[in-house]
Image (cartoon, rainbow, N blue to C red; front, side, top):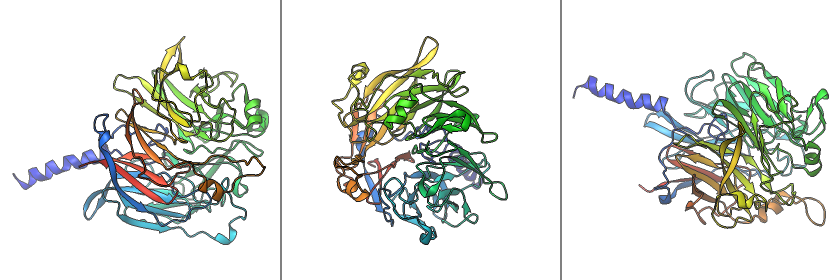
Length: 519
């Protein structure tokens, strides 16, 4: 065979790497926060039972309150002197970013961000840990951001842009959000990067922050969810990005639309100018505020269903909404396309009940759209019999699965299955007909019966079990794999990544785990 022919054949796989990468570059896999890796086909319902621990690595990081490692992100096709590599990147609560070789768990590089700790506010606790909190974002190929770059926000609110290959700065770190605010997972569209803040940490306001990275001054725009206090945007995935708008959900606070106070609301911002253009407020908003049952704890997801772009939202109340992305709440801003019955949180509990973190959606080979929701606590007595398939009692929590179907010309959620019992499930991920989810083992109680709040140390000591990775059949919820006692620690407010033939999980003891198929 000629040298020319060999070179031609080698060029084909290179193009495939560029065009068909199965990266997991951001929280929830994509800007829409679907939690679905469409290009990953390593795992099937038949072979996932053979998952095994490939490697684990202890990251040099000090936990701050309940924060330890961020959810991992994965980039394929990193060109190195030793060929193409897949890197796993994870942020550390004590202001670090580490890159690990996905094949063998070897640390490739680690960066410690310089933060002026003399300005760190006193009185840190689990609500405001003063930690690096936002899941990083990788931009690998094409688009308006610099290629082969990982972005991360340190605890002082500065945005770092690093070369994926070696961790060196692309540009000088730039102030993005207020110092020691609580930032949530980065997202991007074009040359603009997005994050969100809530809970008033570091004296920050609640809302969405946008940085135009291509502008010479890296212009930052702030879109407040309230002109007063509260209305925090603290869903784990930050914001979700649709075709023309950015979506976020807010927490408790004052509500006065005329005064710009959008508590307990799903709101949409224009991608063209980063201005708030639409919103949906549940009819029972006052009740949600009184009972602390807000949606600010859960990031919406965006997906296309037939001829509509839909937004799915929900939160601690235990109800799920389907909204029209082009008109979130209709003419009166109070009318959803669909509101589910109460599915979880019959106890009306503001901690450790309802839906938390983020959703996942998937379109099966037949074209049916599915929704997977992490439900904390048991299903309600009204909802339990509506699910067509059960996989045992689930008093602690479960993954709830629904099909999106039509009724009276509107989309509805049809309950399909509930998973086995899970202790405080994290947001799920789906690929190729398999749903992955972690039972975190976290202790979620906040208030003591005697009064006062549990400290971070007390909550960490009282964790209810260890983190367990499960794999479920996406059509039935049948358990296909369990990691058992492989991971002895619990996890708090993290997430998983499924890419490059690996399932990545982080735990509170600063350990990154990789599960894969036996070779």
